[in-house]
Length: 132
Image (tube, rainbow, N blue to C red; front, side, top):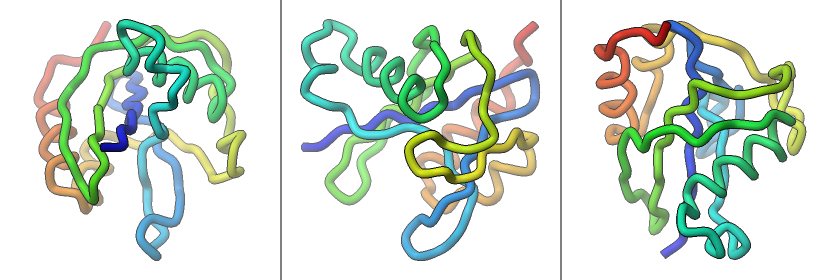
């Protein structure tokens, strides 16, 4: 089964969103991507994939955070990782595909999620205490 990592970059009550085409509809999504073979050489291959994807798409260095949840959709296993620590400046567009990136309040982003397991994970995050 293919695997993918979804990055939840959180800054207080904001989450980094990417405006992209998803299943034929433009919508706010979260950055991330496929786990690759080179990631699997690491014991924490999900963390390795998160670090690589953040560097490729956002040009930043992330500290892998905790897994908020996992779900399977269309033969892909998704690992949702919270990232609250990074170095580098967040760009205004994804370096891979030039999709627009923007910070959005969690309470505004959560209702727009169309994948129910991901929506539940983000709603759980909303009820958690804000980081310092």
